[in-house]
Length: 71
Image 1: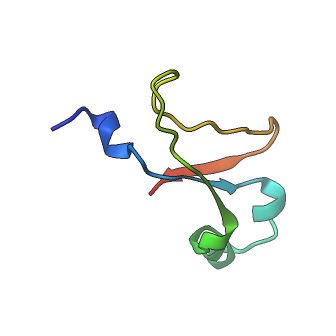
Image 2 (image 1 turned 180 degrees about the horizontal axis):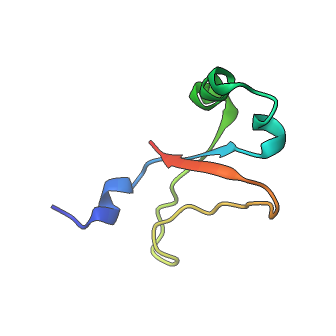
């Protein structure tokens, strides 16, 4: 078995815009539907390099909120 970081190797990083301006007009069911809809997520591919080490490179805009997950 490898170290825990090995479990994420090769997985795409999923990023969802999670700003109040998007979520506040929605009721609870609307929020759940927004999160569940895979088309709302962007995917950052895993980069297999030695230097820098295996990683994801993600540009984020300050002042915005994001929901991040793997898989």
